[in-house]
Length: 290
Ligand code: UTP
Image (cartoon, rainbow, N blue to C red; front, side, top):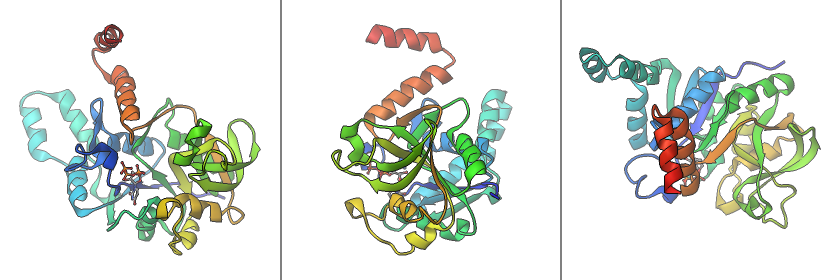
């Protein structure tokens, strides 16, 4: 028996050093891809998966920015109404989340992704929950998290989204030690965080989407540091293998690593083409530019 996944944790307390100076005053997840900030794509993906509680792990400064983005803005709405800008009014209204659905907690120091998730424990430790890293932006017909919720409904336990990476890049990712693989769903006997290419048990990497059983907190509580001296989420998930089922899903869609410059620009091109009202002009510009 599995229960519905209704809560998502957004760990957004990282420093975003690869995007300085853009991230000096605003958090990385507020960087826009085409016309929307990264965090809004993440919220929409979660909503599509049936999530109704959004938990942001952040700091007080970034909380204020996120609160004003997802809160109501009556002054702006009445101005848009006065000016007859109904399409824009609809966009603004759609970004507003009901107050009771939004929760914040703080990570005082960026001690790692595992630590960031641990900081949200009081909101989620009573059951299974999702974790979404907004800087992994996914373009998909059916949202990646919805695809994962469907796998969770079959197997329960922990479910992560996975994709193949070139072997020389394994040291950037959490890598699966594969047990069984039907081409779409994989079970693993272990996980290794950031292995050197020669030590990587496979080239199947975890990307920023997780459905986790609350038992992961039993391991995060120990605050064991791993790769890079950080408290790694992957290590805690790995420790639950045997306690709860573990599956990786090769999701249907394209992932953009918006934590890196190239991934971010690629996402802007792909989402720009998809979302622009003048798509053919943009396409012609790109063609002529290249
Ligand atoms: P990254 O590894 O991309 O780190 O974190 P970062 O700090 O955001 O960026 P760089 O490497 O300095 O450029 C992946 C996700 O995990 C969150 C980040 O906010 C991002 O969403 N994170 C990471 C935390 O919330 N806390 C941490 O301690 C580490």
